[in-house]
Length: 209
Image (tube, rainbow, N blue to C red; front, side, top):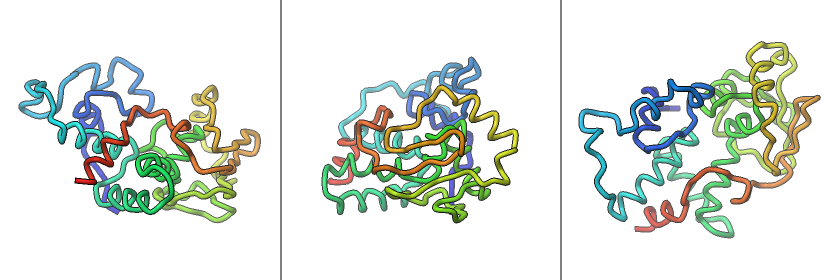
């Protein structure tokens, strides 16, 4: 599947805020947003004019895409899925994005960032209901279990990440046993479970035009 391969700090600078795509680096003085707090490109420093209604909607959609590392075609597919579910379309969209396996791995503390989680899933380190799943976009469902493979538990990468993220609680919709490194999906995520500063109604307005 296609993916973004340019410098990820450019995405944060374009949105004018930290998207936490580089793990620990985002909390240091090396963060691209802190060092160069303006949009990337030749005319980046001049992009301070007030956004139109469409511009605000577009930026919100781009921000959501970049938080979860999703390209446009797949993001639109998720929106179509959200419109077919019962409930509020914008909240359904965020619930679907939050249910991606790479996001679950990040939320559980196995990775320092969503891009790193995507890579770890792609390398086949995780099992869903006892079977290896190496597709980052796999959508987990209530009742399923996610666990780290036995052969991966001794790797320094996971030991370091789990220790660094030890104080970060798992979301309520995931029941995580830190002793067995196994999580159970107890429910679909709802808006209150998602701590990202996204105004999802603007995304719905954009796609409803």
